[in-house]
Length: 177
Image 1: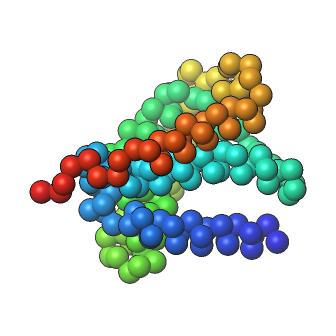
Image 2 (image 1 turned 180 degrees about the horizontal axis):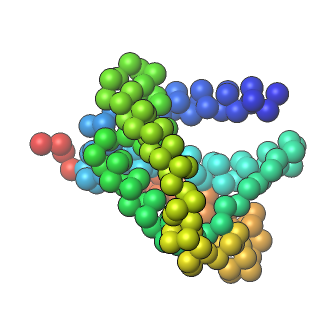
């Protein structure tokens, strides 16, 4: 049942990604250049819904939230690699899968590159652990731990801010040349 529920959510998210044309590297490039905000607004709304829905679903379905440790150097290095790959390929992991399902060859190569990168990181993890993971590792902390507010209140506040952005921000900032 859990896998079927996850599959349904994944199919729905893939349909929404295709609907906002987030599987198009050109559209992603226009969003990264802040010419068009449709994907950014879509992601803001998805985070807003997910932030609240995860707490609502936890009230009905047994869920396990796994907070990952906050290791600053590793997250910075991973963010740089991710951002570079995102900018060069025009895909992130989710949009890459949707692009591959559409039959885009560049998405298939990007997906293979992402899987290869994940394998390389897994193999290099023991060597990287001492230099990237251990220093500045603050453990499993959350925003609620830092500011001492209830997690659901933070989720609702974040959701309201992101939903307001999604509905009020303009979509087209500059016409593509």
